[in-house]
Amino acid sequence: MSKLTKVETKDAPAAIGPYSQAIKANGFMFCSGQIPLDPATGKLVEGDVTVQAHRVFKNIQAVLAAEGKTFGDVVRSECYLADLNDFAAFNEVYKQYYVNDPKPARNTFQVAKLPLASAVEVAVIVAL
Image (cartoon, rainbow, N blue to C red; front, side, top):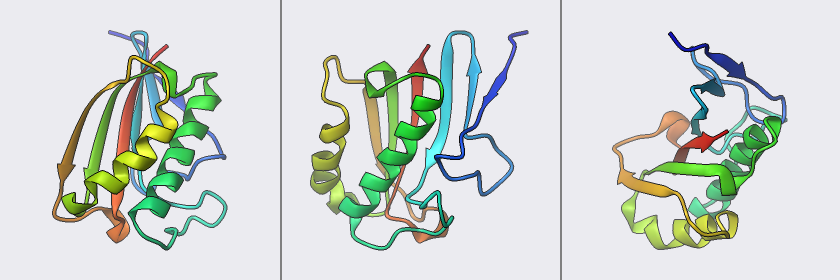
């Protein structure tokens, strides 16, 4: 049985359900999906997918930083969009955070609905 360690930072939004911001296990950190919540207010940021995606990546960045990690340590990225027509705009934001090669493995899905009616949610897996 592997030891599980909770990762938590006040610089990212608190979980809005019964889950952790991230869990470390077996040399990896598994980060829960981040939606565009402002960590200071706990409220969804208003704006299009570009505005919301920037907030999502800032939230992820805060969780990564809590463990001394960066986007360069991400090995897998799972991206969920409320509207796949936002794919190109989302990619423009995504590439501003994933600047180094190799880029992480990734999948992107359109989903019927995201928590709090956000436009985007992203979860990552990080090599420790």
